Image (cartoon, rainbow, N blue to C red):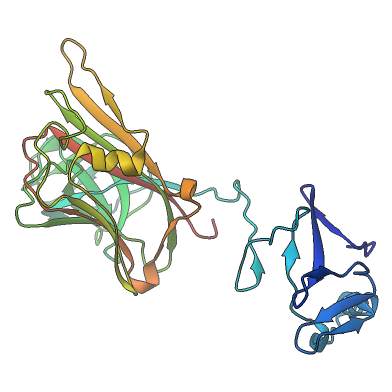
Length: 321
């Protein structure tokens, strides 16, 4: 507002100050602001702006105002702050599965450098070729994902399918996990994602896939009968639990995902069910604050072992990055 014009323009939207008491706009924004408490005008906005520029602001002159667009629709706000968001501001995309720990763990016997594929270990007990593994850092939070064991030298080394992104000390932990959630949840199995204490995550999407050899339809869960208790997605944060959904059958998933799709198998292939649930399409994200111990949980409450594969992946960005 270097020219102190009466209207503020932002992407072809006109912003004007109004009198909240009467809903009448203040035409001469340059010369007045409306004081909500006394219903009197505050003169000399030019002086007020000049004071801001010279760092001599009289904060008693700052008053409450409402903002309207060109059609006199109120501009959305939270606690009087204007909502502004640049869709391209985030650069730290994170893309991870919900996983179930298998409890086999081992630490490197020699420090791991960035780019290492083979990790030296003292014991390979509990690990087999084809296992999914993650690497946990010193604080116990999982720091690297998407590893599959491609080779094992007994009690000597584990070879992974890709290079590591980070360096690790011998205090790090290699942990066997399963990205396949087709497990027996007769006794509830809980998988979760959780940020480390120094990070806040904004979850924007969940992607689901089910693989099996039998055709699927809306009345079933994958191809098996509709579940009794269901698969629950819920927030677990400092305010308590907040259940987002409970899928008992494919129809329940369609209500959340909408674009859930069935794929007909090729002659030697499998049937697939896949879909995406994008929270930002509803104008929201799921916020997880690591300092508060927040988690996004997936509860399996039925026996899903008749499925070949059941996978759920979350996508998000780190707040401020």
